[in-house]
Length: 118
Image (cartoon, rainbow, N blue to C red):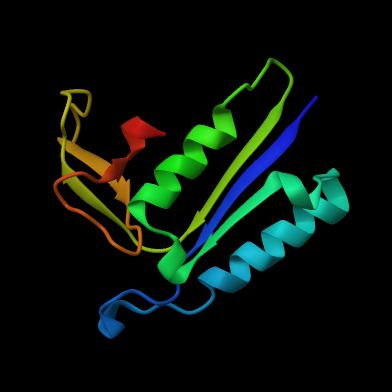
């Protein structure tokens, strides 16, 4: 049984007005938890912090996370950063008509990482 995780934390966004506190620390805490209490190897923990947490890097990290996954494997995605909403792209949001998205360091509003992508 494989154990892999993608841990993303963004405190500093390009616009200082959007800065957060604690997201990078969240990643460090989750990383320690996964290693110490759940037996994850350090080599199985992909970490993207601040400016390294780009749309491309997150999409690549997600692809690597699920690549070769088999029944019984444990896959963890932890994201700590801004989130938002955009108009629903595929008609599956009957209640509010909105998709929830995560906000990478270089958020592209035209090509967001939405809940449907996860």
